Image (cartoon, rainbow, N blue to C red; front, side):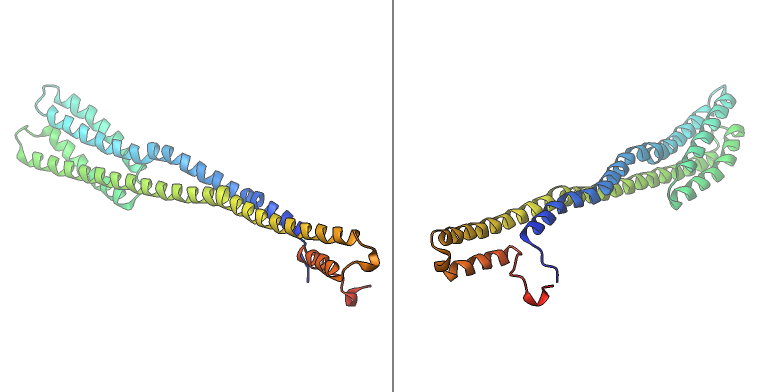
Length: 237
């Protein structure tokens, strides 16, 4: 059986903290990178998807207003192009099945409605009902975008919690535990070395033949405690 001396234990304890930090560093760095990228993800996807849905709503309101204008056809054409741009962006930035289904439903309903807006009279109530229905679908899409945004925020919070836990354990708890263990081992080493010194001084003050056995026994016990026991004659070469 391998016996660890006090010196070896001290070296092992001293190596634990940097070893843990070395292992934890890639995970902490990766967590920081992922957490930092969440802002870009929010900006590029969830916020862009919500802005696209609101852009569709604004374009639809502009089409309603255009029905009473002299240049109705030109305004309707411009807003139809804007609506198509926003719906393409919303479809590209959709992350959930609910978002994709709502975008598909809006696209399916929008094309015939825009044709009705172009040829119908401003007082046509059936067109108004279809417009309100499309506004409702767009409102549902905005709610779905907000839900996706909330989900990303919750995921970011979980990632931040894991990152804080890793930093607390790897950067604070482990080093301080190692320090406490080193402090306790150092205290043991100091006591045993002090006991050896006292026994040695008593032996030195007397002739070797008169050296008290209890001092030799005390030195042997201290050395054994420090990991240096008396050699076993059965294991000698």
